[in-house]
Image (cartoon, rainbow, N blue to C red; front, side, top):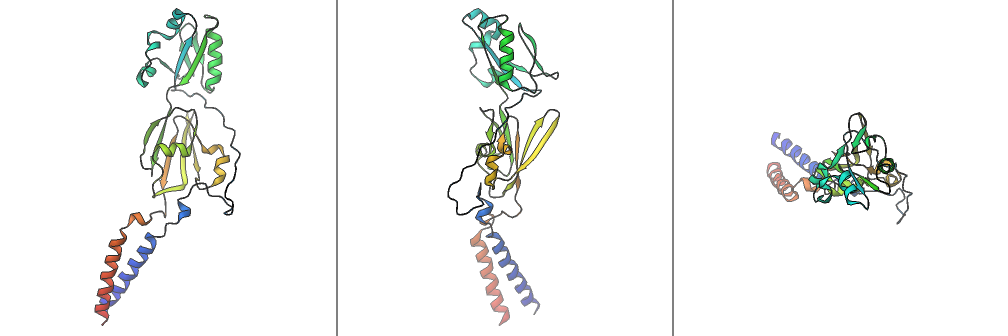
Amino acid sequence: MCCTRFLNRGLYFLITMMALASCTSKKELVYLQSPNKETVMSSVTAPTIAPYEIQIGDRLYISVTSIDPETNAIFNGQSYNSLTSEISVDLVSYQVQENGTVTYPFVGAVSVVGKPLSMVQQELKAKVQKVAPQASVVVKLVNRSITVLGEVKQPGRYTVFKDQMTVFEALGFAGDITDFGSRTNVKIIRKNGDKQKIWIVDLTQEELLASSDLIIQPSDIVYVEPGSKVYGKKTFSVSLMISVISTFIALYATFIK
């Protein structure tokens, strides 16, 4: 009687586990789900996104171009014509200091923190032209990288060449979210001055396309939390489960005779 009760409980447990193993719904894995299932195509107005604002610790690549080669050499140094790698760009870049400025030759300290690159470029151009009329100035952000962590196929730090991108593009660098990752609870972490801003996005909601929460900026961290239920059929060997259940059924049939 005891063995029969044990087998009954064991069989019930295995059947329950197999049901849970196959309970992953397609809905939990699909991005940008439309609330209206009958809608085949829909359009969403893209949000207005503020440009990236320079932070303390950023590195800026600054180059001056004019018709005079000597002027170019004075402002840009000897490395101007040898920017062949990320390392060489870093060597001729200017780090934003704790006081929020960068110091550029013949110009002096320039306040840059909290300003978009376009504004810094215009202000620096005005200062340079006082020394070299008709010169043009280019300012670019060197530290263009994002970090993707958690339940993604290839977590890591990735160099990007855009001032802004969507969270979907960021996840594309990391090979997409695994079957174990939560698509409804993705955290984005961003440095904001001396603080960290954290917000959560739900990638299954189509309305996300109209939200500024979708946008990733340089130095952001994307963290995908493990899902609470998405463990799917890949977690269990179905053939093994069937074999074990078959064994239990055979034992059950033997003991109840």
